[in-house]
Length: 460
Image (cartoon, rainbow, N blue to C red; front, side, top):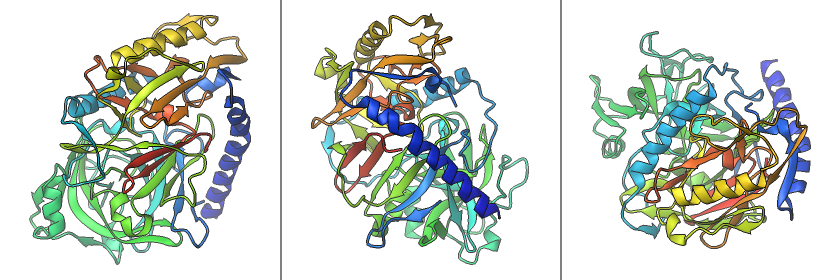
């Protein structure tokens, strides 16, 4: 009965997407501005594709949205979310900027992790772990590699409360610990996730986040069920027995980074190290996480995926221009020289100072008819839409190396609680970050062997 109710719930959510988003997609085409409802700017079943394809798709929802598989109350203020988001952004930009030159490469050799704020991730997916399969609702993060969940034994002082029961390895017939003298443990130890050996000579892991939160436990393997006919037989993950810090009610992290420990590379034989996601727009929507290449790439525009010699973990792209209302902004190309990181765990996009100043000026000019509102944290271009049923916003497009131009979703991908969802990196010398607000309603396709990233607008 519970499974039937969940299936009906997801069907209703998916139907809402198909109906509500159709008009928004049609409104975008060939226009310099889009009329959208003012309420759009407020915060707010697993299956295989055709048998000839190895692609598997899972529903993806906002962690506090009505379509989230686990309902958790959002008790954090927007200002606090933005404060933590800023900390994550600063951690990323300071880590990757002023590095060695960018290269077109798909080589992945040095284990590492993002190590930023855990509690800024906003999108969740449910998978099954163990035999028999136990549901685990995990936060999606393209900035992390090692997937981890909370595991028994774990008392109330060592584990945070979660909605679903803790994963119990003793009840899984396929669970195994990774020996400390194994090649897998040596590979983990070569990066930042290794933590020596346990007293039982099992491989230990430790992940520390910039917010001060951390998780530690045993590096393990077990069956991971992605869909009814999609099971990863020996998936390596962290079985966390001791967590500290401001974690939420979810069961752990699903790592989709570029390095060997991630789900992407562990399922290489099945999906060819290709995956995509579509983060749902605001409202009662669901998106998707898909592993494997689509049957065709019609509708996508592509840009090279870049790799830094000493930071191979980052999904880095080269932004070359920004347009507002169909007009290209006058931004010197050198401003974008440090590139942009695609990150599902960051909320607001951080642009280099010169680029942000140009975008802000053009956007404010196009929105001059609407009353300004006080800034919200670092968001300094805010509006009071009280009394407005519809709002006309200018189109905003990002252009990447190779000419790939992506128009951001006007209804959900530009404004956050009435504020322009961009801020500054505090200098042109820093790498920028493309946050998840700007990624909404766009299928972002990561093709690691092909060293490219694709975008398809209006995908969810």
